[in-house]
Image (cartoon, rainbow, N blue to C red; front, side, top):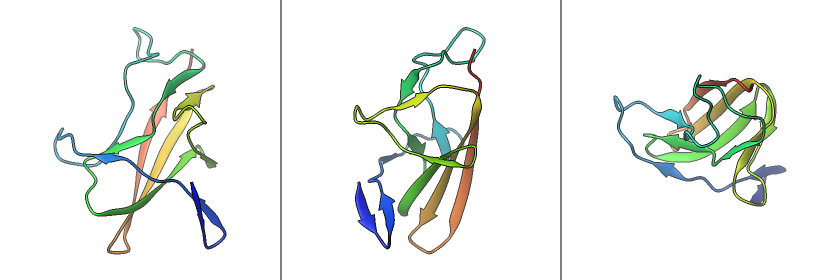
Amino acid sequence: VSREGGKDRTSIDVTTLFYGGYPFIRVPDVGRNPDGSYSAGAAFPLRVMNAVDVAGVEWYLDSTPVSVGPDGYFHLQSSAELKAVVRYNDGTDETLVKCLKVK
């Protein structure tokens, strides 16, 4: 984490994994229930896949900024929309959304 312009910035890990070639939020199956929901406390890294030439990613749970904990994982506690605002080097933004349900 670094501080730029009064904002905390987190280094990003952007990996290419083509499923149609479009950027998406990758949430692993660890902590996932058979019905596709997650257990409270499920932990996973915050990752955007298939994004190229990225300047940074800002993460939100609903409208609240979030980041990974000291262990390098995000810990999901309740159902919400996980949003990644991907900022590209050309100045454009793209918002990716993944709905996460906790049971």
